[in-house]
Length: 397
Image 1 (tube, rainbow, N blue to C red):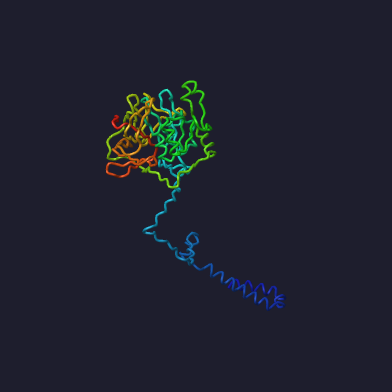
Image 2 (image 1 turned 90 degrees about the horizontal axis):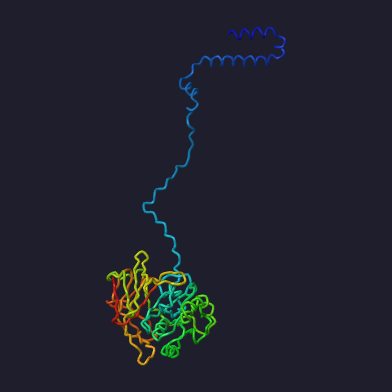
């Protein structure tokens, strides 16, 4: 009650003003009394223990709860679809003489068949390491000569030295519908070339645009071993000549290739030697790391004079046939049969098997059969073909 007495004394002291503002004063007194009384009650009320804890620990405020959509966790696919493999690059064109893929489409282009000198006095040969197929065949005098076939000549440097034609080389070139390149020839070869109307470029009696004499070889080896050509010259002049550059429409190549032409059931052939005559033997040594046979002849490794590359081949074919001297030929030239059939060997991947070759006529291609009558498949790569007398020696090791 003490506060009320103090308020009464103040009212008595200021009574004139109170009379003037009596209504407002009365309201004010009521408000003041109410405020003071409530304040006292609030000060005297004891604090709840739970409230004190909240005051001392702000982190204990209850969490704010809001309503949210439940998170949907997808169940793992029990059998997910595998990622598709990337699309492989489209296959490129294939060189029909090797079975290998190449950048330039040369499938329907006529190959080139070039006569290469193999006289020991003419070594080294040039450009032979780039040939797709090489035929080595005996000529007169106990020496051999090569017919090198190229499906694409564009990346070949100097080629040679170029020598003269023989009838059986004409036969082989014709079987490929090839453009035959040579320098001179025997009477029988010229007769075959004319009678069969074979496309040819002769470095002796024909146009000489693609041929020239290498002066260094002419000086060191002699004139007969100096005639050469180049891939660049051939590519330059061929389109200017008036003859067909593409294969005949009905021409079908007989060679078959497989990724692995290894004669799995064959006998060992990591080394072999082929005798063409008493004075000419070609040897082959297999390199398993390379999958190639490397050649030697004339007592040395057989190398290309352009870049010193040793001549090598994936496949070796050895064909036995009839070889005889042409009656009355003063030069001792040979008659070598390239038609009919005969025995032979296929050598690949360090092994060899017996085969039979056949050719119906001069317009036909060579066909090769295994002993069980199935067609021979070569392994993709270069091929070296030896044509020898029926009873000549062949050694495998």
